[in-house]
Amino acid sequence: MYETLADFLVRPAPFSVSTTELLWTDPHIADEMLRFHLDETSDLASRRASAIDAFVGWLDRRFPLAGAAITDLGCGPGLYTSRYAKRGALVTGLDFSANSLAYASKAAKAANFPIDYRQADYLRDDLPGDQDVVTMIYGDFCAMAPNKRRLILDKIRAALKPNGVFVFDVFSTGMFENLREERIFENRLMGGFWAAGDYVGFKATFLYPSEAIGLDRYLIATPDRTFQVYNWMQYYTPAAIIEEVRAAAYSAVEIADFATGGSWRGGATAFAVIARP
Ligand SMILES: C[S@@+](CC[C@H](N)C(=O)[O-])C[C@H]1O[C@@H](n2cnc3c(N)ncnc32)[C@H](O)[C@@H]1O
Image (cartoon, rainbow, N blue to C red; front, side, top):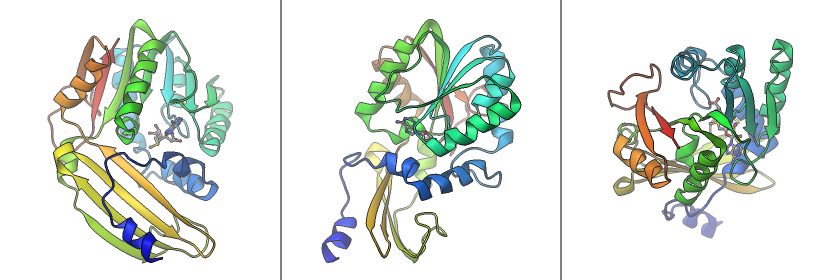
């Protein structure tokens, strides 16, 4: 017990441990994530419908979706893919969360959208080729370690047509500036999010200001098991993400406001990135 708790408070090296899959594959946590994805009053796992509509609106105006081949990486319950399909795109949705995909497939069937949903790990598995547009939304790019970000940039570049685009969003350093280091422990931390029955949850937030990286580290102790979750996040300035994407051999990288597709004015918001191979 002492060793576990003492180690929990030690600041890990940035991106030195990855537990991403557990968040989306532990049955209870995956159900809770799906609930948050679909919760219109919370931005915890997905944006609200109005923000998604606004994004898809400008994406369609800039890169006409009718007839376009588009893949959404980490599509979750299909909040973006269904809107792409409604606008006539040929859509693939890729995610490793079985329950999010089950929800997405059921919704697509009900709406008669022929969306190709695939349960796959975009870091390990092949991506569909000849794509006009690839999207990856809600800071998923920022949650990956630098070597994985480079890998996914390479894979997406190879999956795009020569005139295709990769559109994604990143969290800004303005958002990082609002964060504070904290230590919390509570009975059923986050109201039962981490396990169905009794548990005690510990949360330690670590900030790495010189690298603009944040870590929310959780230690969850149930009567039967103890596990930890590391939620890493890389925050970006426009210059930093442009440099990183260009280093992966993209020829042009543009920053845009996520909601309007126009110029991003800065501040504590995510922003969109449009990258061309
Ligand atoms: C924060 S959610 C965002 C979902 C969706 N883009 C949205 O905004 O509604 C991240 C999604 O990415 C998926 N995901 C994360 N890493 C993945 C990977 N390596 N391969 C496939 N899916 C992944 C998760 O299962 C989850 O559905």
